[in-house]
Length: 325
Image (cartoon, rainbow, N blue to C red; front, side):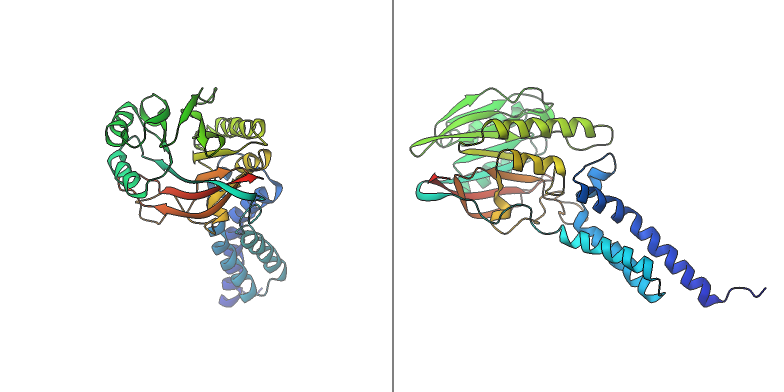
């Protein structure tokens, strides 16, 4: 029997390589299609979903080069799904109608264990938001914010805790603090904000990240945010912070859907702008920091700000509150 030719071996190796390239994109896009976050490492890889079009595209090219139609169809299908899911999730606008009763600027920032507190103070004084949502703000961070911003932000709600569990909401407008969201690992303070002629329910979001071994906890805490959103459906709501989830995670999409909330960055045309990880060898690739608003608001603009000494980009959003949704 004649030995396989070099070209035959090369075609076989190319086909095997293409198949291997498709394993992870197939599993992840399949979970996205089925609406499940599954188990480790799926939630972590879902944050990379748009980038999975690269290995799928390489696999398609390889399959075409070696003329493997079944392999090419598989690669083409996975590539099509990966590209389809890069589209922003949800409607392109809110149904807010009627006259504008108030204008509001909101800033959400994770200061990474309080490291970027000074930089946040400078950004707040420069940008002048009406509401500031600060994640990973320990007691020292909270004191520094009070010293640096107390003259302009006399109102607040906070959870005093060490490390990443501490959180603060600051208000230039009157705030009535509400109890922190119960049953969570990290603090999620809330308040009722007096905005224009009425009240707005505000809540800081900071569920546990989807670390290996903690996927169930991550899903449960996003479920608590989903329940909060559902319970306040019908009234003006702002839910902002570090969600540790992107639009490709089913648990995050359930928060949007249950409360009829809208992602402000998506409405401003920045749905795929990365907010994490900042300051690494690669640019931010996952948008896990969000400002979610109810149908009472329209979005005038959204910008991501680079704050030194934190691994998150801050999100600044300009909102209009309308008379009716």
